[in-house]
Image 1 (tube, rainbow over the protein chains, first blue to last red):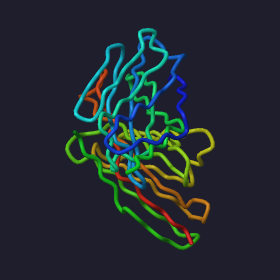
Image 2: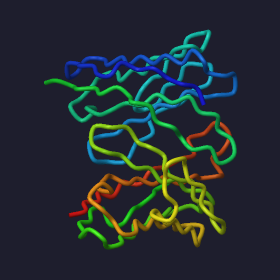
Image 3: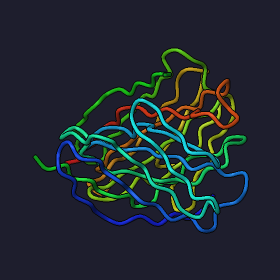
Length: 111
Length: 119
């Protein structure tokens, strides 16, 4: 699975958009970009994933560059409950492959 | 989405005792479950892959005789920490793979975690 690089921490004002970057320059053609988050002392929660196209769901939007070497997770209107560690993972969804977590980005939403 | 539960959510035990943690897929059958461990301020570390009806596959550096994994049914995997010591204190998280969602879908669902404290 592709190695990903994320900033260790970010702050965001409540109500503003949170843009979390991720570099995955070694991602292969059949690897998806998955985003999970982990709120303190809870299990990881799935947010969104994509392959080539930009994706949007009720939680977030995922913007993937055309060369697929980086992506940005966008939380359109961050709330205090979005404070968490966000993990970007390159994942080839086949067989019994586990998700491998990097260090992620600790997002602090500030009132 | 699919739901994964863990029991107990929190356990405190004395050094030298064994502790069993259960991971259940509540509304789907999981032939594969994964066990992770997370120390404070660190990321999740994969410990082992649990396969129903066969032996678990352990990651390098994880002692299989200390962390016993049993995946006896399609909805239950257990992790037993044997002869626990204070350094085993950690947050243990399982995930279950929903095979019907395989192929570009989110197919892994995580439990809420179990906080183990060994005194």
